[in-house]
Amino acid sequence: MTRRPARTMEKTFESEINARATALRPATIYWYQRSSGLFLDYLSTSHPQVTKLCQLRRDPHILGWLRHLYERQPRLANRTRTGLIIAVRRLLNDLAAGGPGAPPDDLFSRGDCPPHDKYLPRPLSPEDDEKLMEQLRRQKTMRAYTLRLLRGTGMRIGECLNLAVDSLREVGPGYWAIRVPLGKLHTERWVPVDRETCDVFHCLQSLRNPPAREASQPFSQHLLLQKNGKPPSYRSIKVALAKIAQRAGCSICPTPHQLRHTYATSMLRAGASLPVLKELLGHRGIEMTLRYVQVSQVDLQREYRKAVEKMKETNTIPSLPSTDAEALAPTLQHLLDELLHRMEMLRRHFDNEEATRTLRRIAYRLYKIKEELKSLHSPAK
Image (tube, rainbow, N blue to C red; front, side, top):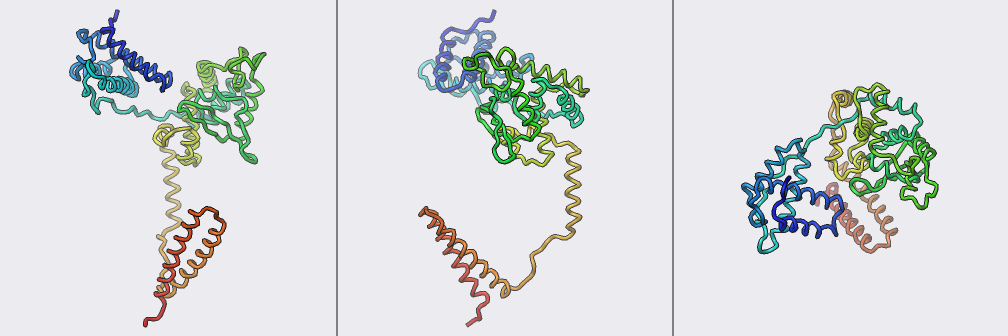
């Protein structure tokens, strides 16, 4: 049985974590508790003589713990190790300013965290994607429609399970979008959908099984409801996808999250830009979006041939027409007159004094340029 160090160290960590509970989410507090627990377990096993925080040293205590995390079996992902190190480092850094009995403030260094894991995108191949969608269209069950909705929107499975029954909205004539609720990054967004995805959503509305007394049920407004009045679990969706993929003859056993990777890759191949794709997926940065898309050799060959064809169509580099200053100056002067006139018309539509002053300042600069252009074609005195 593993024995923790002196109770005072455990109480110190508990007190520091509880102080953060008022401002942090429960999941974050749980991560602090887990990280500190693993650190204390290591100290009790490898350095039982350490009973106070002030006894901690970088070598051997912190370096030994870092080595222990690296050698742990089953192996921890770099991302998990980084999270554990950062959590313990923050706790010890805050405790270092606690006065007598506090730990030293030089226990960690910048290079302690491992490099980020680089995951390759995992989209389905076009052949497997076509087989899977064909098999899904044949089935008229709630889970089959749910998988089609995931493939057609690129949502996370958690976001899909929390969709409201009225999430589908018409945002314009013939344009529809699904309001995705607060998800992994605690942000919500609108995802455009096509006619097929709209039909899938309506089918899910018709298949939902609301409880007898909806008002008293916490899940009464969810789109996906089973006979017990609760949404389906992630495991049931995953198992259904595996069975359908096997029945369709896919070469791999996909997961629901791979449908999100497949959606991102297909949108990129269809011409969607990365900023647009970032908004569709609900990412905070382009870096995360790049992890979701896959550019295959076929894509490179297609884009290369398009570029070669464009170069063949334009054999020469375009150049500006050659003309003398005397012929060009009157043309530029005429354009400036037209621009000054339009700016004056625009200024009259503004009620904001600051905007009016800005337009007047720009107009004055253009007027000075126009006056200097007159000297280019005026006769020398």
